[in-house]
Image (cartoon, rainbow, N blue to C red):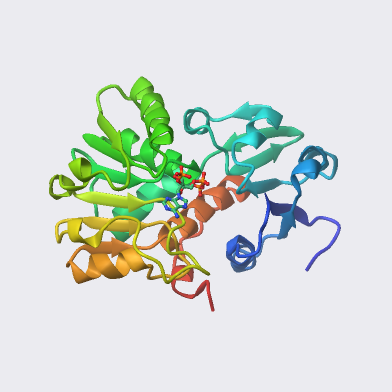
Length: 283
Ligand code: ATR
């Protein structure tokens, strides 16, 4: 029950139409009988600074930060974890007595999904990442931290891929790296050498589900684990094509859940163990 001691958590982004985070966090808060509430806040860009000032003024316990503010929030924080600094994006803010601390839980969320849901050991493997936006940054760092041997980054806008590769190379010089465009056959024909392919683009997400996969399915193969970070729909066109080729597949639901569990634990000190939510967050 909400009373004088209820602590406030929330989500700040714009637009917020399809977020599952309020359901996820309120479910765990109830399950663990914690006196918190998690609310969505759709904040327009011109109101962003006031909203962050409000977090301190109203004494929020913490917030998730989502598109388009994961990078912008960094300038407003008192402290940012080394991992989030490397990634250049914060998705979780904890208010410790007026000190705002920033973390990125997408990276551990992604690592846990590969390990637990994909039974995939990153060490020594080769990976293709498609897309060079915010999600790609967290994925690239996750792979580098866990000992990937090679990353090929393909993006529609090649310049963006080049820039990101440069940043990664500066921090992880031992990982072999290459980049190219989405239709660059020089690269796509080498897909057989890779064991992991991650699509970080929104291609195939509702409402535009009836589209071509982001790369030509002819290059997919049965020794690949294909990950699409989209979770709505659970089966994107890429996942369907990958299954046809006999590849293992994962959608983005695991990462959503596991990053949420990490954030929850930063705010409350409790790490929920019940992961059954993955199967019915949409219901
Ligand atoms: P996010 O933070 O979710 O990663 P983002 O920063 O906007 O979002 O990045 C979206 C990524 O998806 C980008 O790599 C984008 O390619 P560009 O850099 O060329 O813009 C990619 N993307 C978006 N729509 C795409 C499409 N229709 N085809 C191919 N790539 C697409």
